[in-house]
Length: 454
Ligand code: FCB
Image (cartoon, rainbow, N blue to C red; front, side):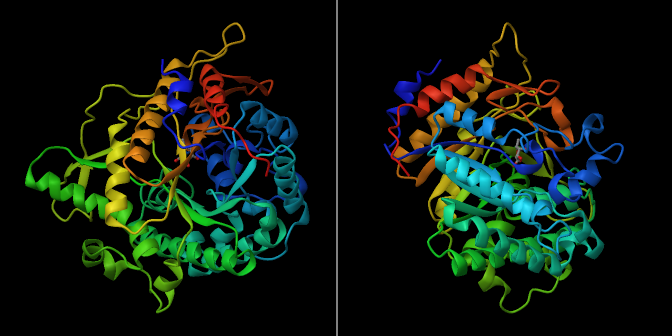
């Protein structure tokens, strides 16, 4: 087992350790204090979409247990908490009336963090789009980007003064491709044209959100969280190598390009540009405004081979075999060198600001035995990826912090509650939280870093 003291010595003194969650995955109380339905409420109530037809109605009941959960974060000794804000609590119909009670909740949350000397890293959009916006087409409609801008402005005006950092979007790859092309996440579309529209309107909404922050809280660091994919060819054949490059454009380039270079990738545009929605003249300038930081969510590599099917849509790839036979309980290959390759490639290809690893962690479903949760494989996964992170920092890669996903077990989207990522176990019958072995280890690691009063 990697000793937390030895590992901590490999990080700079100002490196930030945190834990992360997202609103829909933990809050529950989906009908409380004026909240209305999100696309995830609708999706999880449809048969066949989420494992066991689990939904977010109760989740970790965090909405009602916020103070105890903040105490729990404090007890872990971490410096920062990354959480997301539920748009359907703030503007329950997406557009229209603002719900003060929803704002009050996040007001109490940020004050509760300040009172405990924990930094507040907020995310504006972690997938819970107000359901009413689907009446206009959801993210396939350009109007949703402007609705997001108004929502962002409402949040920043109310709590922006007490945030330490804000991200516009969490993993647009998921809310674009996984949700509109692969049909796995809400709203469950499987349509390339819909997905291409969602892509541009999400990128635009990001830019409009950055505008809002710059205008209303110029000193608040703003960024975006991307689940960049570390992509490997299935073989060294020229076809597979070319397939991996196309996949890089499709899975990474369509976000990194517009946001950091003000352009969509060339190969992607030659193949699919004619199916994109209208890109108005100012759009790419809005999307590519300078950011203070970016967040990387990394879990597993992506391996692809060339898809020889005639007329296969770009990027024309199929999944290739994993190289490591170690997998987590959700079936994701464990392969930490992919994290290093990814960070190096992204920093050499794009002019990126400093990076936070905003999510990393592992799914292991062991439960409580005699009051303890022995999740050694999760501990090993986190230690291994932190060790790679320390090496990256030593070679000069600008990585400023690491957030473990997740603070506690929660609603794992299409997998419902059966897949557990927490460093704290949640008993969904009693809502009892039990810090796992990995959580105790992470706490010892964080304790090596002296904290300044904020
Ligand atoms: C990421 C999501 C997060 C969580 C982890 C396991 O894609 O951002 O909400 O579900 O995966």
